[in-house]
Image (cartoon, rainbow, N blue to C red):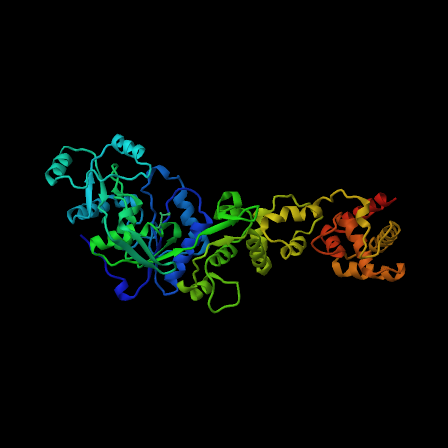
Length: 492
Ligand code: GLU
């Protein structure tokens, strides 16, 4: 049997991300992948992708592709894995079935596991009698000859782990500290199922060992099952890996309480967030901070490279982290605003579903929107007034701050404005501003009041991306004149 090259002895950190392909990529899984990646890459170690597909009933078609494409998109490149290969492959558990059977039999030979022939009916009856559930260890001490005879006769079997009945099992988690379990509480869990597939409980231990994983990084839901796993390492005589369990991810409920992050809190899959106009870089940056705090940086902004340099396990917290959609939105906005304009237009394109009419200057419009949106899916909505002016009430012209208390001011401003802009030959922001700023003095009002009236007339909105002259520049001369004329009709 092939024994592994002991990477630990060579001081190499090896981590893995071991998802089950059971659906979309939950943001919690992505955080596990990220932390696992960062822990190894901080030390120039290796990062492995392993697909855990032995629970055949929970498989979802296409889920493995989603996992791979998410890791690719976010830059979490794995050194070994299903499509890149590596010396410890295959990296899909269903392709490693024989390996697990071999190791399970080895455990039986060593007295740390046993064949169990109990029928489904017998087990079901057991559960009814015993509300706590669990197996009564009926086959734990079957005579060797009987076991062999039943195997020869082709009876279906499972292989169970023979748990110690006394004492405690402990391990030290790098985040949560010492975890101890009374052995009397451990059940003789199934390692190999009747269908010949191993359980997660068994195969991940065999694989982590064979793949030379030095640090097992995963969600804290595995914290209390890990004593069972370290017993397997001990039984085989293998050196235990280091364990890094990550804090729970919570979502905020409407009543202010928190509960495990799930769909009812909002979009929690990576793909849904991206489809909603979040940038992968912003998502990665935000989720890096959900359970980890940088030691030497005041800044909250990190590229993946910066995270690789900054990330250390002692910055990982054991307190649950709360996923805050507002905060993610803010991060995303900052990332969008920092994009250079060309990248922004490229990323924005798939989100623009509206037909943009010929009078609208697409580039200038996008320049106005670039720094004023927080996610790309806001674009269509935010740009709609450039395309079609929304209906509005004339009361929108009234404005305390600009001291506009009646309709005479907007009427005068708009009438004069028409006269000034109609002869203009260049209809750009500067020319428009120069032409219109003379109005303030002429009418004895502030420039702000002039621009307010014009902006309402050309947009029909109280709040807009860009000011009056910028909007006119985008929609063009004819449309601006048309909108001012209809405002004047409204004001009659
Ligand atoms: N397949 C397990 C899961 O998706 C992996 C747990 C582990 O990392 O050990 O939860």
